[in-house]
Amino acid sequence: MNAQNLPEVKWGDQYQSLTHKSNEREVIHTSGFGLAKKSISFSFNNTDEVVAEKKDTVVFGAATYLPPYGKVSGFDTAKLTERKNALDQIGTTKTGLVGYSYEGSTCSSGGCPTVAYRTQFTFGNSSLAKKTNGGGLDIYEDKSRDNSPIYKLKDHPWLGVSFNLGGESSFKPKRQGSLVSSFSEDVTQQNGAGSQHKDKNLVYTTDDYKSQNNKNHQDKHHAVAFYLNAKLHLLDKKHIKNIVQGKTVNLGILKTRIEPTEAWKRRNSNFFNGSWTYEEKGTVSVKLKLPEVKAGRCINANNPNKSTKAPSPALTAPALWFGPVQNGKV
View 1 (cartoon, rainbow, N blue to C red):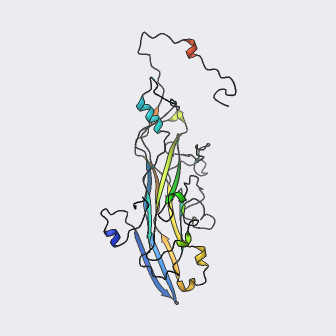
View 2: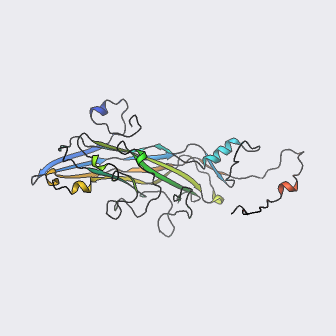
View 3: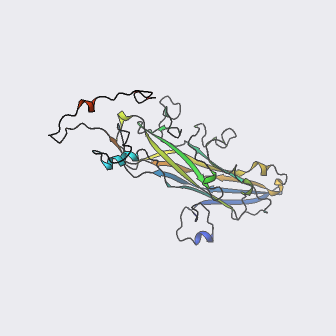
């Protein structure tokens, strides 16, 4: 990451000069001639993972509403914090990184391909629950407050998760991108490049952003950082069970594809510039590490103050609502 906290590729002497070396990647570059036409290929292997994690304990229970303000006598501050944790978003603790360098690529500046990067999300290898009838993922009937699907967890069906993904680069900062929270199950690793699916589930793409400047000349590089945000949802309060901290939920996979833009392919001079092919062998796994989850329940206990008198019926009678709001509904 550079001074702007954006990903970048370091190659050769630049990489060797770094004090802390990490996130090494593999690239194979080949070039040759056949029938007076140059053939160039790049094969990358970016294998990584993006992880969201919360280390604080969260508590789900029947009492889902907290006091709106101030300190209320009889409430345990620590317990209130644990309940609040259940409502908070779980942010990225490890970004997923992919990088591409074209060192050694020999082409005139005018003949270098203009390339497009597309990163798709698929539910491959996910540990989300599936419908018992084999009809895909088991998605909760209601959506989250931000209108995202809520997916049931396979090992904890009373608990659901909604999430969003985003990517940013020095070429395309986050402010130019958007978070994606709804994904088609029809897209797979096998069909994602096909014309029917290639524009679906895109977490990152350069198609719509200054593509004309995104060439792969030898002094060019491209790196992307991926982020995951998630939120847990209580779906069935009658079957809450404790969960130990650190259990991992595999949400899916990010796969990046590179290819020359359609505009560059249509240029008449491309025959003399040769054929260019790109391959990405690696994927970025999308993972959520669950916090410690506890089941919070109301417990009836005797009042420890023996001199306390029975409360007035006026304080224990059920509330009556008048006007447009009745029984908590409008």
